[in-house]
Length: 484
Picture 1 (tube, rainbow, N blue to C red):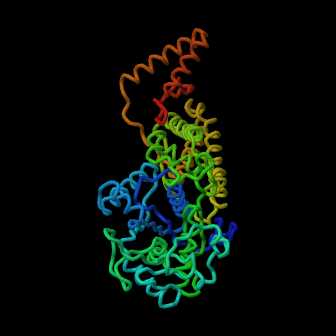
Picture 2 (picture 1 turned 60 degrees about the vertical axis):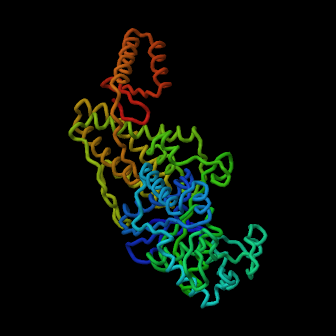
Picture 3 (picture 1 turned 90 degrees about the vertical axis):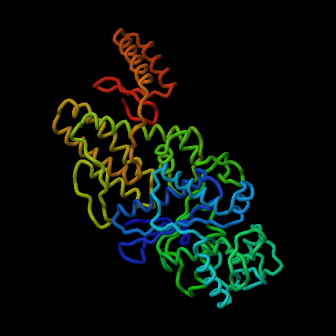
């Protein structure tokens, strides 16, 4: 049984899907006006991993994500960059997709843009006005929060708390300070569409209510986003969708990712304390950044720092070193990566890797406990490392067990989204110099000049060369690459 922490229920609950064996999931995607920072990227990578894991556990998943491609921030960015709104959105959509690909994040099944669904939004707003849940102030349309008794149920806030604690947008026609815009009247030079209330554009909150239900229907299974979207965005989504549909619930389960921290503050573009996802990938490599993203619980608030990424790099390199050593030991017997499915109602068949598969799925079934899943993979690696020397020496039972554990390793790391890509072509001069220094180190060791040998190793480490001593001799790699 898979369990998730449901923000609406305020506790961990069994995943209860609308249709047996199927999961309909929606994630609030980026507003495409700038490059995504590592906090944005973490939320998207995590939710896409949830999709991967649900598929692994036997579910058929339909995963929808949106682009907000009309917004005040986009309009301002177009002014600053001297581009059209379309040129800005196309530029940053392409950049986002490049950044996600670098992190091993697969695209959603449906990627919807707000500007392609303005007609659907107008229809929903008309329905809300007809039901008395929204009102026209002469070109601007607002949702009347006092007409929706459940307002505040996701965030757990009362109207008094919200009014005291939130900055509100003043407008002379608003009936309540927290009423929010569904439709904004056009301003000169801004994108706009014809509507029953005159030319204008939709508000931010109506986009996701309309697009999610268009593709997934009411009562879909999972809605995700970062925790700073709980209020007001997701609270407003619920109000709009349920006021329009009547008594039918909007979403069955809400899951929210914690915010990345920088100097004890959440990472945000408005605060200016951001690290772009592409800069993190450039500095550490996509798979190391992915390791950092997934190694902590999705609900945690991890600190982004060079030390944290170095820890992730060391963990990732342990995996990669094992894989390369196994490849070296097994040769032609090396198993190929595969993508089996292990449905929730199927038992794991006994075998050399069964213990680690059970530990892995038990952890992730329990509210996506990725630290437990990572611990299972590291446990498998420790067990398999103990077989390498015997397997390489020709011990048949050790070789068979190593092959089975390696196959399990590829299965579990594949679920986590790691592919261990081959390094770029090496520079012959660098290779030759490193090999020469390793020969000098080996000579020093043979002469029992261990201080000299250790000094060579330390200097190479400073230069980004990792050395591993194996029964077959020293192997090396530039950080982030495979051993030579």
